[in-house]
Length: 227
Image (cartoon, rainbow, N blue to C red; front, top):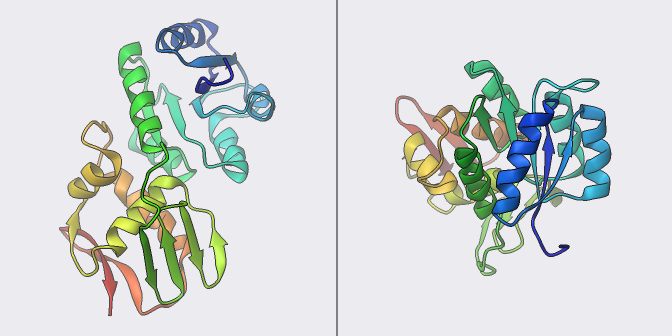
């Protein structure tokens, strides 16, 4: 059992949580169900999951705050579950560090597919020799680390992969659709706003004036400009 991938399911609807757990168990995952934000944070420490399925509307502590607290401790993948389909709610979840979102009601098979897609993106990669070095910045894809002005930065894997991909193709413009395909994969069911959110978070973390920068090419997409 300890060798299985562990998934923490956080939803105040017991029936939904049990249904999700049933489908994930059939796929070979180990699951734990909790029904409030407070119990989610407690279970996160004791259960040590590899992925969290996190409802937004929770008693005691809502899903946004749970996501915020988890991100202070870990970069493991988080998929938000929400009955709200508005763009604002999706973007807020992504800005807080969620990796994906799925709107209720959803098909359990679709949720399982999303879980597998996100976990694939977090699998260790055999790319130990891949490193980008520009002034004041080192991006090492081998050990998934970013060093900025000599300080180790905390970037979730998709932010790091996006930064690495752009920096490894300096001065080349990529559309949002191309970046979605390259970083999130062709099976990702999100929208192009996802790219904008992650670019914004990268810029906030690497916010000093440099000879390089991530430029917005209006009407097209983004490029890593290195002069």
